Image (cartoon, rainbow, N blue to C red; front, side, top):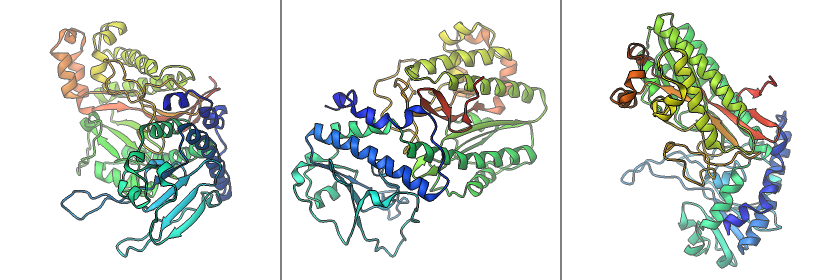
Length: 463
């Protein structure tokens, strides 16, 4: 059922807004509300058709439940609404449900916040409450005709409170429809992600200045990013990666060093922000110093920056994302060869697996309410690309990251040095570059029928 829905006219309802270009950024709260109203209307239309096709009267979407950090303790993680719920509204309270029915205004049922341990999250003025029939209750009650209502949410106990049977909870066909809808972003979603990019870039620019002008530790740089963007460790979309020197080669480095580095070194910052629950995910790499190894690393950084721009330009509608990932390996091979780090030909470098030692991860992933968003890894990648998170065909309205990398990871490099390709490696230069860790350049890209739009830096230049 889900597969037939995905190939039907329903996605056209979802993709109609964003296929033509970059929406204008809202100037006022009322502008945001208008965008959100259009977003909800779009979802209503799509969901109405989908539920009718699935033979379901309504679907209940639960906002989520606060989770224990550890089952034998009493500490909870901060409240985070589920992405399925947040797709409709940025209202960020647990103990809330949305009831979605064809040809009816969505109903938002919220239990009153009575806990004296914590307060409700700040109220946002940029979403359109008039798009919902809002009911405040002391406690959820059973819903009429619950036998023909589906439930989406992690806390199935809430479904039982509402009288919804277990077989109607988290049905695979309903989840498949949800995930297909989330792959194509509305104007409200795109502008939210663009606003999240603007905020995150403020932090990246601040860290670039701090890195170039002084000696700060990873921990101090992390704190500076939070201060500049007005976020906390609990409100950033993912744990900030702030890495100096060799730590740049640890792809998810979060154990910050407390000591500054005064020598020639590199800094890799992978950090984002959120707006209305939608994430930005940006990585920048910089180098400091004038020694020979720093100069070569600077050349590699320049080459990788150019390669990333080429890959963004090639992110075009109708192309398989995995094909773009494969092209990245050839561009990275050119970069490795340009500084004399690897001496064999580009074709041999890719075929022998040398480039995969330097670039082991996927080119990017879908981005939205989740940093690694859903619905775009419907098939397994080839055996050469086990970590690729996106195997979709590029479609107007998708937002993805483009993030090629080049790293000096000891465990990966050792494999090359022990194999037949060792003859092609300039081991002296490699040893000098190892303390710099690696490079990653990452932007957030919107696919449109007129070509890619870079939400991180604005529209691509025509040349």
